[in-house]
Length: 557
Image (cartoon, rainbow, N blue to C red):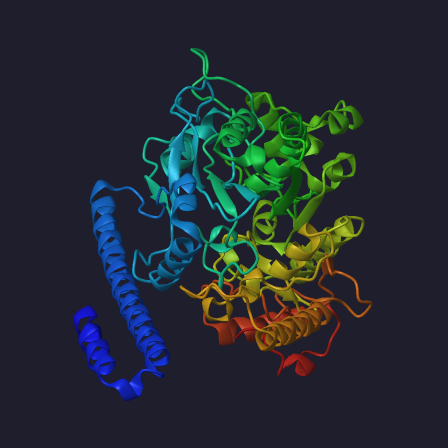
């Protein structure tokens, strides 16, 4: 190119008629040469960019395959932040664009929870094996969700022996898998978990059989350890070193026995976190752990947790577990400390914010209260129907004075790990919306995944170092205005008629499973037969003409 330019300038200099135009023409040729150089530079950069994308995709695929062979997760890539400053503005913009374009070329599977054992701790599962937890960290979130697993309990030598035979993984960690898939509120899928998919997530498996309350170690005179409360405390201490110390919020949650464990431990965990990380706000989320200490419909031999009335099984259990219960509640019931396992007794003594999720016709409560006669299947007489309907009203009454609750009229049990948990709704407000509203102190429940900025809307394309023009600023301002309008519309939609956050929702429909967002029941017979019998027998109990119920169906069928 330089040779060609020299020849051109040499030819023009020989003509005397062009002496006055020589400087102007030289400048024109110089500018043309610079434009050509810039174009070649852009082309090289685009080629380099394409090669970088190809190399990154290839390396990610190889890394994913190698990690799969090792049995480890390929989801985290170590990156030195200090080295980023050496790239300069253009290099960082190029790297950011490569990351955006290669987002879908790596491992497309959802990240899994990784197993961590408490190897250097004295707290153990029932059989003496190491307790532990599963973790999935998110560097983009300062919010942590710690989930306590549920699964009944045992209360004496016979019930624990039966539990070891039927549910060995709930008493030992020896066969825990290396990784576990998260679901429901532990899912990283924004469709399944619209408000918490980016949070740091921890699952603590249940292997203490004591509703997360025990402190008893295994000795020569006892076959099992019951250390649920100590396991939870030890995991929280470990998580401090994993990043919880720098968090802004910890949501301690659990289902069934895990939900009861939240109630029993929440104030103690809040004090522990406050002593080590004062800036972390602790809240409790209880799912299906709000049991009633009422009289069962009828008694029967007590062999295990799901055949015993809850009062009887808990009274036996506290003699075995050496439980650690909240002081204020124990002081309120000094001769009946077993009542501190029941939410409506314990809740008034708590100092930490707690949100209660409880089906009005909880399947586990119905089972332990022996409402159904196994020999008669689904057939219920008038007294059984009355007891069932009264049970729903009793549950609703105990939740009236809670600050945050969600109680659908469903015949079901735990909710939070169900993949369709976000679809459950009362008065057109979903469970996930209500929880987010409560947890954010009344903020609008617009899903964070709906407000993310797309790569195409950013002014960060490579080589675009110039500031945005006035036209671009005007467009950005309009986009922000439209975004605010959409957010306000969602805010009005997700709030109640009085414009306030809906964090206390109790179903008003009059019979079991009358909420059409309830999960399907697993009835043993065909739904047509069940629906016909259900409505006719319910009508007789409620003093309604059965003919008027002929065209009424159970929701969802």
